[in-house]
Each structure stands twice: as structure tokens, then as C-alpha cells.
Amino acid sequence: MGMFDSVYVEYDLPEILLEDQKVSFFPGHEFQTKDMHCMMDSYLISHEGKLLYRESSWFGKQDLQASTYKDTEFHGILHFYTGILLKSGNRYFIDYFAKFTDGIIVNIEYEIKPQNKKPYIR
Image (cartoon, rainbow, N blue to C red; front, side, top):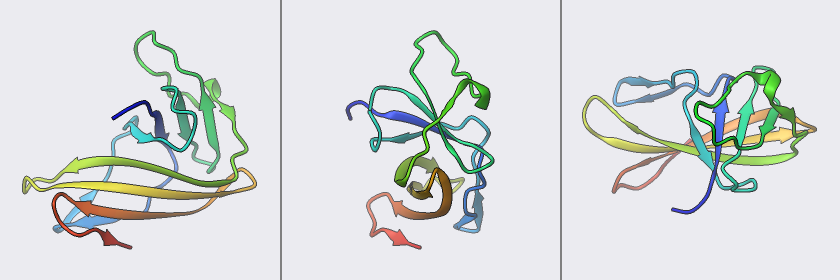
């Protein structure tokens, strides 16, 4: 699996409906990315749509307060992802692609990959 960085999201993600079930994530849900430095660091997409950065701390619970993060002024597309398990027992992987321009998010797209099935692209 290798090294990765964590991504936390305050920004509103696109609404997803799978098998008549709304997909949502609790505050503090940890997504992963391999698009940055892969040093087990933390990134936060703030309510304002900025990508913020904080170096890894191996001292227990992650501090998700935006004030502990620094603005990356990121420009480009950040790919981050997670897996979910629905009530039906079906598993899916959700890949998000967040486009940042001049440090601010301008668009988020997603791809849903059912386990052992063809990807559903939206």
C-alpha cells in the first residue's frame, strides 16, 4: 500500500446517492491521497475551499482545527479517496478530484468504483 497523506474535508462534497442511500461522511473522516509528499502529513480542505497543510505529528489524535494548518496556495487537481460499506453489504471506493485555481477550490468531481464491477463515472 505504501505511504500516503491524510485529507480531511470541511468543504461541502457533492451529494452521492448509491442504492437509494445517501453517502455522507462524519466530521474528521480521513481520506487518503498520494498526490502530495506521502509523508503521513495532514491536509484540510477548509470551509472556504482552501487546501491547508500540517506536518505529521505522531503524538496521538490529529488536531483538525484549521488554525493549526498553513495555506498551501495549491494550484492543480488533488485526487483523494476512501472506501465505504453500505447497509446492503456492498462495498464501493469513491475517488474525488478537487480542482484548485489560485489556492481556491473551483470544482469537485468524483468516480465511484463498485468492488469487482466496472467504474461508475459522473
